Length: 370
Image (cartoon, rainbow, N blue to C red; front, side):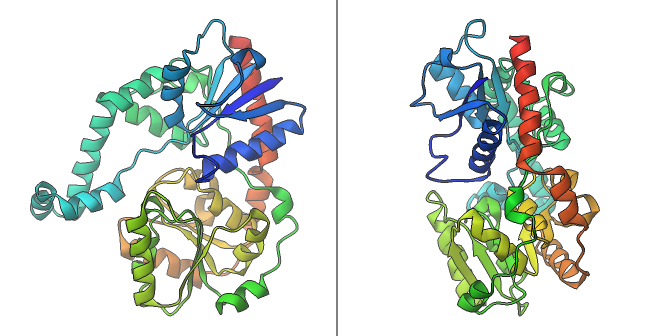
């Protein structure tokens, strides 16, 4: 089998979860004898060279269909990993502080109800205006949909008004970890602890951007005497937000930014942390949370997205819009005894080997339909 994988044009320059999902799926499919080639909308070989086109990230699907003039009867079938979650909470913060109309609404209805109104309005706009309508139309062209969880597919159907209509050609492909990086259990990283002078610290591994809510974590833990370490590349598209995080870090103290680190170094850093926190505005479920769990670290996750599908009651959850919710989740995790249950669950169910096996099954179904 020959597969062409496509993602966003900056997938390598600005790596994220979709980058890792694509690269690790490729590596583990190749172990099973599948030929995989990576490409993008600007540069890829002829479709006739392949049996399947696998697109990662829902935002790539419609531009692909528009630009490439894909023909359903002659070209290979399309498989889509949507990595979709529609949430606008961090947009509301900017709107409420900068637009007089939302300031008035917030005074009248209060912050919580105003945010609900804002989110509902944005969802209606997305569903009925150009971007959502085009995405909805594009979904009808794919052979197999590969959400990362049941929650994700329900959410996608709800946002687009397609209740029950996507399940017939959906197959859940869970995200995973690289087993050999976490089994056996990574040791604590003493040199990292010495370099930054930290021990028993709070850790967040994520790109520095508003969607990942690093500023919210700093503010929620502002008066707690515990170090916070951020590992990740600053977003090249959100310099104002990056600067805000650094200013808050200086005001609080004991906040450290390491920049991005290679995957083989992360295991021992997760293992050195007291808690890993991912208080994002959405996660499906958050690869860093999976990796932290595999390294034996306690996990605090956002409640927005599909993290509960993966971790259940073995993790702690927070509302990213509520500093007290975030603070309490972290404190509860810090005060709880260490357990191996979540680590064992992740290594049993959520590895890239398992993801590749399920993906290969989906490819075969797509080819049969074509």
